[in-house]
Structure formats: structure tokens, C-alpha cells
Amino acid sequence: MSNATVKVYEALNWASSFLKKYERDDNAGELLLRHFLKMNRSSFLASLREELPAGVYEQFKQAVQQHADGKPIQYIMGYEEFYGRTFQVNEDVLIPRPETEELVYGILQRIEHKFAGKKQLALVDVGTGSGAIAITLKLESNRLDVTATDIYGPTLSLAQKNAEALQADIHFIEGDLLLPIIDSGDKYDIVISNPPYIPAEDVEWMSEVVTDHEPHRALFAGADGLDLYRRFMVELPQVVQEQALLGFEVGAGQGEAVASMLKQAFPHAKVEVVNDINGKDRMVFAEIG
Image (cartoon, rainbow, N blue to C red):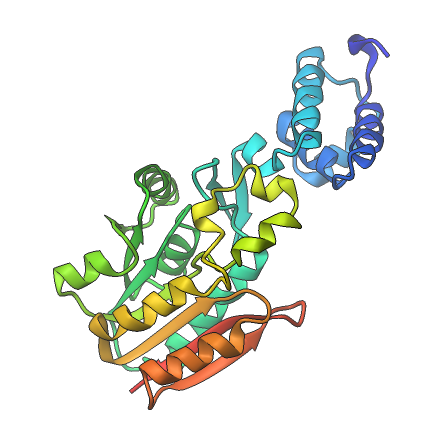
């Protein structure tokens, strides 16, 4: 099949069978080809019998090989969709997941319920990564004054680029968990975080697409995956207002453990574990005061 005569559907069929051999998601071929053709799905489907430009076919073949070798397609393309918006991603940040959209939606619902009469609210997103949580919350609710923290400078730089591209006014701070907030003496109405929560030993069975490419500092957190939550329970009481809302993403099976920690740290809080769309305990919320 010479490059000059390859039709879109032929390239797609080749990629599908090639990726299946490597046990990758064969749907990745369509996403990559649409990326290089700069087409939405309806335009793409209408062009299946058209010939591919030679240069595009070469780029596409290289990208499919990269994905077969384990590189996530989001890092190949340089972006991922989150809450209807496009976020730049690279190997300095975790790829935003659909489950985290549920965390954002859950916190927005609870903000409306808990702070119905309050016009401006201070929120901090701890360990912001690509900035997906912080930026989405700011754009979905203008009453939020949003701060985002991360321990790693290059990660924070990418989050800042995303905020600029999406025109979200976010205050960024580099630092370890809540320590920079404690140092500043600031208090927040809302704290949200999707921290590292994977037990260290899980690396043995996880896909190399994740373990070889996504940053380990954003994935793993000690023997049981709960190390960062333990630190949160020590630091949170120093940074929250008397009336506050907390929201965390957790690993499947960790919900009750994190809820128990929150009840110990805030004995009078209303704490709830919420399942994601797949029925797995994925979010823990706490209402204080």
C-alpha cells in the first residue's frame, strides 16, 4: 500500500488490527487520525473514502507505533478533554480522567447547597496537575476565588498555560500539599484534591501505558495508598474556615478509610462516600460547621 494511494478507511483498518496485536485500544486509531486530520467525528466519517495526504499518513503511522509501544494517546496528541474543555497535557502531569469530572460536579452541587447565601468563596485545589479541577471550577462558578497548588514547578507551569488558554483567573502556588497555605495563614471555604492514592505494590500489575509514562509522584502514595490523606488530616484543620466543604477523589476500596480519617479530624462533620458511574467508591465529601 503506497503512501500516495492510502484512503482514510484503509489507514484506520490498518491501525485497528495493528493495535489489537499489541493489546491496545483499537479505537485509539480513530482518535489519532482525527487529530492529524483536524476533524470532528462527523467530518471524519464523511471522509472515510478520501485519500490521506502522504505527510499525514507518515505522522499517523509513527503515532500508532508510539501508542503500540505504550505511550498514551493524550501525550502523543498533547491534550485531553475534561468537562467539555480542552486541556494541554504532557508527561509532567496526570491525564485527567472522567471520574474526576464527577468529583467536580459533586463539589459544585454541594457548594450551591452549603453556601447558598455567600457571594464569594475561597477554594484551593491541592496537587492541581494539569489544572483541570481548579480551572473547571472557576469557569463553572464565578463566585469562587480559586487557588491551585502543586509540588512540581513544570507541572504548575503547564497548569498556568491551561488557565491562560481557557481564560480562568487562578492563583498558583508551588509547594508541598497544604504547607504553603499554612505558611501564608490563609483560610479557605473549600478544599478539593485528587491526590496520589495508588498503593506502591500495584505498580506490578498496572498497565505500562500508565506506569511507564504518567508521573509516579502523581500516582503512588505509600504501601496502602493513603499516605497523602493522613497528611491532609493533620494539615486541613489549619487552613479551613469554621464552615467549610472538603472533597477528595479516592481509589476504589478506600472510601470508608478516608471517611473515617475525616470523622476523626472533624468529629462534627457530615461525611459521605459517593460512588462513581461504575459503582466504585470514588469520592469522599465532608461538610464542616
